[in-house]
Length: 161
Image (cartoon, rainbow, N blue to C red; front, side, top):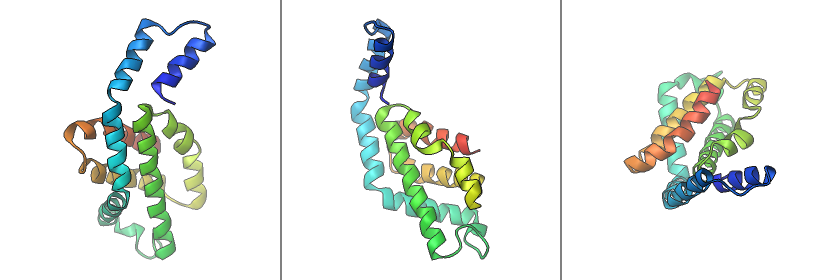
């Protein structure tokens, strides 16, 4: 949910107008809109490239994942991993666009540990995969855009660590 939505809902719940501070936060949010949409567009347009680079980095760091007995051993398993990497990258764009980590939490992190544990996927391995996604993504962004996007990757990494 965006800052705008949060402010409106909070003010409405309390039967009041938005405060000066809340209006200031909306103004700041709107002023960063061009940057946030640029970041999301760059990530979306380069999803395939980012996922390929991230998986290459991950397999170099953790060749045991793609070795016999590893969670990404075999075509099907590897394809499922890459699908998940793309899904997490999409979650990052939701957070960036909304200027909030809430969509990441609600859509992507609730129950993630239980899901991966039930599938036998090591959660720390997924955290490492998101680190690789971050590295591949920020390499395509300007320094300012990378600084804006990085906390959303870090939020997922922290939740999985």
